[in-house]
Amino acid sequence: MGIITLTYPDLCIAALLVIALSLLSFPLKLDLSRQLLIAGLRTTIQLSLVGLVLKALFENVNLLWMGAVAAVMLLTAGREVMSRQKRRFAGMWGFGVGTLSMFISAFSVTFLALALIIGVKPWYEPQYAIPLLGMLIGNTMSGISIGLDRLTQMAWDQRGIIEGRLMLGQQWSEAIENVRKESIRSGLIPIINSMNVVGLVSLPGTMTGQILSGTVPVEAVKYQILIMFLVAGGTGFGTITAVWLGARHLFDERQRLRTDRLRSAK
Image 1 (cartoon, rainbow, N blue to C red):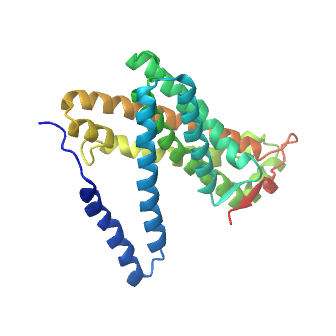
Image 2: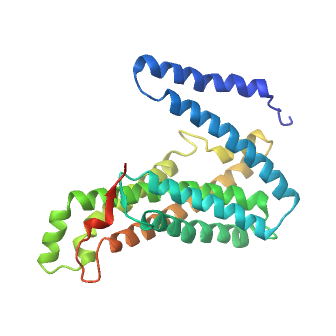
Image 3: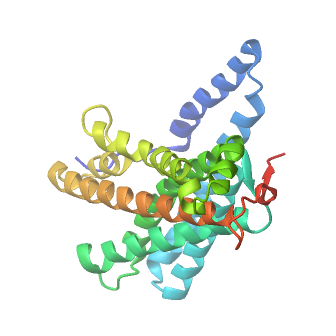
C-alpha cells in the first residue's frame, strides 16, 4: 500500500479541533483562546516554510546552507530556553548558557550519529542531518530549560542556606551541590519517562511517520531505538553542561553567591 496523500480539506478538518478547543476556553475562562489560535497559525506557517526550505536543501546539498539552517535552529532554541525560565540569568548569560550547551551536546551527538553510526555520505546529507538535529535540539532544549529553571529558582529560594554553607568554609561547588543535583535530575526525568513507556504507551513520531510512509516496521523500530539513545545522550550531556555552567556563574571569583546575576521574568 502506497502513501495516502493528504489534501488541504483534510488538514482543515484537523484544524477544527484547535478551533473548537479555542472556543471551549471561553466558558472555562482559561484565557487561552488567542494563544491556541496563534499557535495553530504559527504551526501552519512554520511547517509550510520548512517544507519549502527542505525541498530546496534536498535538491542542492551544500554544507554552508546546512550550517545556516542549523544556526537558525540553534539560536531559536536558545531563545526558547531563556524565555521559559521564571527566574533567568541577567544579560547575555540568559541566552548564552543554554545555546552553548545545546551546541556542545546536540551537534556533537548528531555528528556522531551521521558520521559513525548511520554512515551517510556526505555526513551533512539534509535528509538525515536536519531531522536528527531537529529532534536532538528540541529534546535537549526541553531538558536544559527545565534544569536551568530548577537551578535558578532553587538557588534563589535557598540563598540563605547556600550562603550559610559558604560561611562554614564550603567551596561553591559544595554549597550548591544539592541544588545542582536536583536540577540535573529534573532535566532528565522527561526523557527517562519517555524511554520507559516507548512502545508500550506511545509510538514516537519518527517511528509512526516511517511506518505510515511504508517502511518495514522492524527497520522503523531500529531507527527509533537509535533516536531514543541519541536523544537521551544529547539531553543528558546538555543538561549537565548547562546546569554546571549556570551554577558556576552564580558565584564570583571570591566564591560569593551573586543573586544579582538573576532577574525575574516579566
